[in-house]
Image (tube, rainbow, N blue to C red; front, side, top):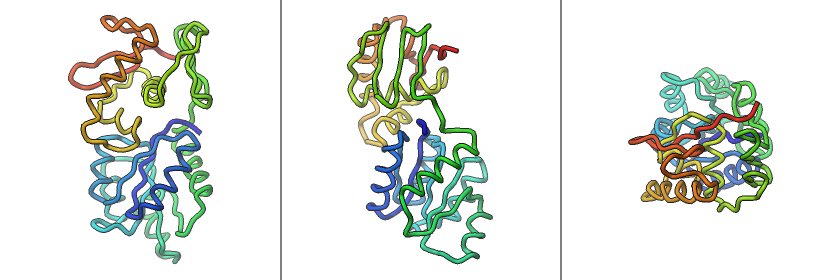
Length: 232
């Protein structure tokens, strides 16, 4: 369905892992948080495209988080809860939720709802194959393949995820933290500087001049951006 980034907030690890595996299988980038405070920090730092939010968390309620997010953002929210009553569902929707799913739920149904909410929000759908530079650079998301001038480029998983994240939003500047979460799926302490190593390897494999790169551009003091628009 695309390369949107989904933040999954639930204090039960089994649920986080299950939801994450289903969403990643559909091509989404997934971040996770186990508390309300970590959820708010991740929303602020990583700017996900959709929030899957459990209402029962150890520190903040889902309603509190939704109110906080809604005070400054129109980030789509799907609420998860064990409360099945109509009043509970209505209350959740009134707090700004775009959809509501009662536990236990089908992971496949959750994925379908994520797809639907993102379509309504106008995000999440990107073509499987993208080409740049008059078809010189081709990136195939579903096959996880990259080619330069028709020749395949061998990339590691992290290198492909990094390139694809940048290429889907040409001109958009990503901080190292954002790229870490898109590549790793979570904030891995100490990993941010290795993004530089991935970029160095990417440029070498793409034949991108490190002094005057065309594809992966450095934005001093911030991070990186993709410098070429997709072919029409």
